[in-house]
Length: 81
Image (tube, rainbow, N blue to C red; front, side, top):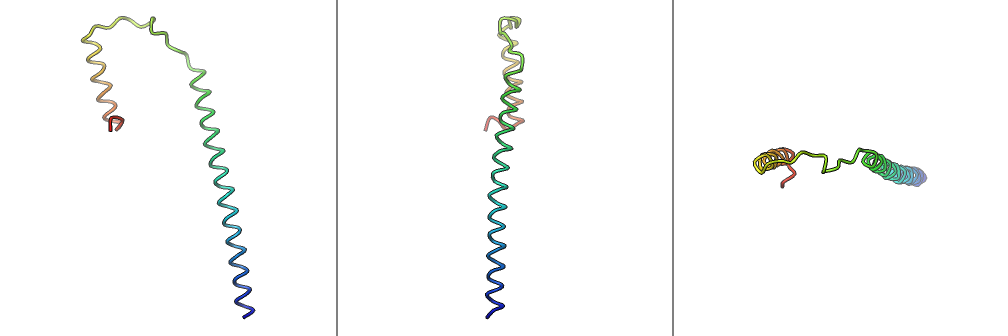
């Protein structure tokens, strides 16, 4: 019986260690995701903003061709699903 109690205690100790590891890992993953989001936001904010008035005027045919190319690209990436 003593061996069984000792085994139960060891299992409980291991379960507690696993739970602690899960909690710590989850916290680290959340912190990493938050840091990545902050870095991406900082990158977007530091990017040069394009003024649309700087762009040349496009003909309707050029716009149609561009929209077709963008549609093809979006389909290739699976963004139109």
